[in-house]
Image (tube, rainbow, N blue to C red):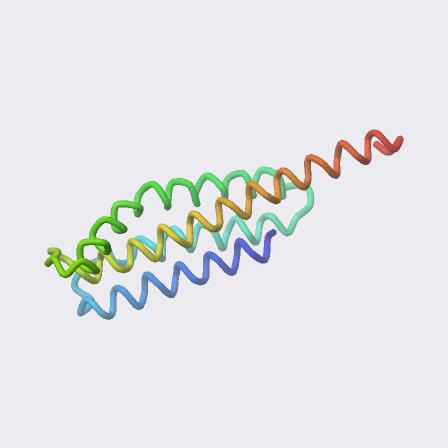
Length: 130
């Protein structure tokens, strides 16, 4: 899961940089996905250490959840655009929508991973392992 976290972080960094460049490099808020992505990359690197993995991955899941919560509003703007209505910042609506989908997918993957780890730990304990 550490590599998935790093990969998701890199995808968000690319999204932030592309969004910043496409807006004429005038809107620093377009770099928000890159900031979230940077945090995920760092946590993914930390998660490669088995002793820090659990805490790093829980932190990454929290960052993903916050990223989703902060960007999910972009989906409404994207829906308006798809319905032919004008929105104030169409690039922002698209970038926020992409970020929300990426973050939601990441949170889903981390939750699935947590459940699998818990099941494996219980099975190991039931089989007599420590």
